[in-house]
Structure formats: structure tokens, C-alpha cells
Length: 130
Image (tube, rainbow, N blue to C red; front, side, top):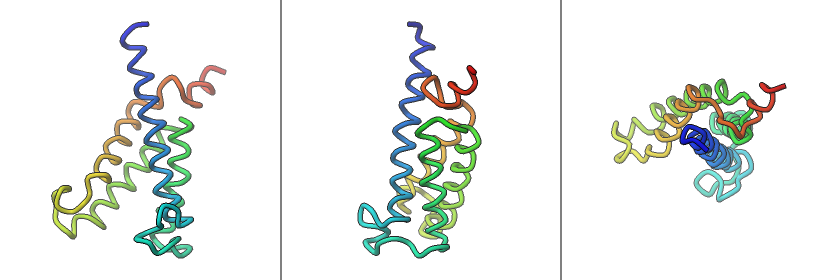
């Protein structure tokens, strides 16, 4: 196998892990799993946090599966940029000071997936071959 082949598989592994972890943030908001939001259980329906949970649950599942990877990653990148500027910047600009490191990492990973696609282990690839 050539090195270029391994790069695609590495991207697919990154996409799968990030998709699963990102969905878990949505489950936390929607269903109160993993302690909910600050230990308060699920977010109230139609609240900003609930809408974010819907986006994160569905978007994370799509990223995990590699289905509509580029448009989904673009939307999630935007969600993370909004989250950073709405929730973290008021506590200070720098991610290490405002606890925004995870949000910034997700934002740039999703930007990368927007540009690079889902890799060889994705439903996008399966559909494209048919």
C-alpha cells in the first residue's frame, strides 16, 4: 500500500472518532446523558442548547457514517465558531483562558473535513461508486 492510501484511512479514522465524540455532546444536551449540561439533565425543548444538541447529535452521526460529510462538516464548523464567540469569548479571547480548546479543535477539524471529505471508509464513497 502506498503512503497516500494510508492518509485516506487515517482521515476516515479521525472522522469516525470525532463524529462519535461530537454526537455524545448532543446526547448530553438532548437526553441528559453523561451528567447533562452542568448536572441539570436534558436541555429544555427549543432552547438554544437543545437546538445545538439536535445539530450535534445528527451532525455527529452523519460525520461518523461519512454521509454528506462535506456539507455536514461545514455546518458543524459554523456551529463551533458561533459557540466559541457566543459562549467562550466573553470569558476572554484565548482558548486556554476561556475553556474553549475543544470548541476550537472541533471547528478546525470540521473545516478540514469540509475540504478533504470523509475518506475511503465513508458512505459518501460507497454511494459515489454506484
